Image (cartoon, rainbow, N blue to C red):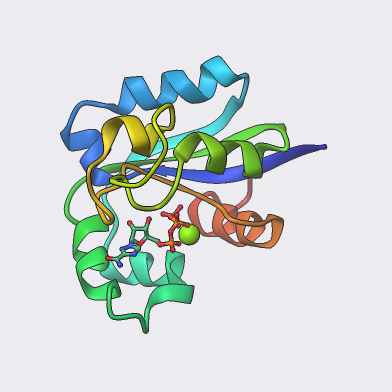
Amino acid sequence: MSQRTLVLLKPDTVRRGLVGEVLRRFEAKGLRIVAMEHRTIDGAKADEHYAEHVQRDFYPPLRDFVTSGPLVALVLEGDEAIEVVRALNGATDGRKAAPGTIRGDLSLSNRENLVHGSDSPESAEREIAIWFPGL
Ligand code: RTP
Ligand code: MG
């Protein structure tokens, strides 16, 4: 079933010059970019996006990180896009993510792990409305 999912290329991806490399992997897989924006977010936007994590111990440094510079937000569309993107992204911790995944190949960090992908249809709907209202 065709789905849409919200993807972030986090500030480490932009800083490290890996936007093209990461987008290439999504496009090569067959996912279509239906919206994309380069922007820097403030703390309030980070809190909205990471509503499920704002009370966690790891959130303050995560908030600093995602607001530390420009990121690229996009919506990808395709068959089972939510699960497919999370499989391409790999496990959260780049040190443990499998080789062949974006994080497994390109990240050595549990925080600076390059990408975000919605984790369910409900999350995708909520996150797309936050980042691309009206889409
Ligand atoms: P994402 O939401 O970014 O796609 O990543 P995920 O589902 O694999 O991981 P999640 O549990 O939702 O965590 C969100 C982001 O928070 C940072 N994080 N830091 N213990 C820590 O220091 C820690 N745990 C998670 C990561 O940037 C993770 O992607
Ligand atoms: Mg998550």
